Length: 295
Length: 220
Image (cartoon, helix red, strand yellow):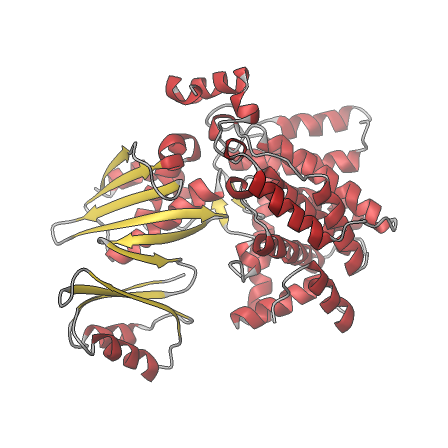
């Protein structure tokens, strides 16, 4: 039986005395009938793609529209030259999330986690934590299975599409997935992973999808920066023993209902929010010509 | 449960920038290519809704063309698909449609060569997933997430049974099946989604069944 929600996912892990990633791996074997090694290898290939996107972004890329690119390089340079306010580990996470989304905007190769527009959070957190936690390759692959377990619950009970649920469904979900996986990789319990997911998603509720010119660039790249940083802070809160007063599944339910009641102008149509600001419209005109910038 | 595999959420590996406008578009193009069964001489691509408005910024056009050339969502050749189509002598026409469509991300693809023409409507439903909603004028729903067979046949008794009998003989389980026809006694179509890939000898045997006009397969 597939786990239907976060509480069943955590319960399975606790009852069998296994990790959340292990619950996900066993379910994938059951669902697809594929051998465990094959599933592990497939996720390993996704991991390699993610690492490559981060590396490409840190070298510097620019999108066709010219709206995004180069910020990951700026952040790394800043970290090398002076002591940052938020700490270099956190900024490293952020720069790697930004790197991935800049590569995506430049039509580079990425792994959608869960979507292309929110593809930075999971690899940003994973590769940003790598120097700090020194995970084995197996632990890194498991990080992706844990992320996937939470993402699957959100996708089936709410949405992972900006057009359906706003940015809370994309970057909100991605950040929540990353925080839950960060907890497992840092040695936390399954329940602590669930708490981290809840805390992250609670703070992403209501986030609208308002891309300038309809492109996955502004504000998507920076939303991934903030999503990945929230993921780290929430993971730390959960590891410290802080819990969410609202259970994770209820937070996911709230996210779904907020998405339902969100105006269509704020769900990936480029008709509201930042897309509808004077500068947003001006940029759209520059990219596509006058037709796009009008009402 | 729409999302059954972890790789629906962690994946696909794709060329950016949009899972719905780029990866989903590439998948629609590739399904069209597989169903047509060969390289076409020409392709007319009609774009609707958000596809029509934002295709340039999202590379929806090159993703669709890349799919028609047989490229996967992660194939870097997608970026140069227009030039590659020219090299391969495939004439491409992109048509921005004003009319509304049921789904915001809709493409209608016509493919053809000297032998035949083919038409398909595809929608991109998010996260890189795509569905075919119309094929040669028949309405259907094909996700491309499981292997599938499309059978064009004459609308006669026993045609459906003969196809399902062959599948049963080879122990191939049907996950989802739809049948439709234009008018009683005329051309009809079956869409069969299966749990496992269809081996070539099964395809040949299906092709030999009575009243069957054409059988094509589509892999995951």
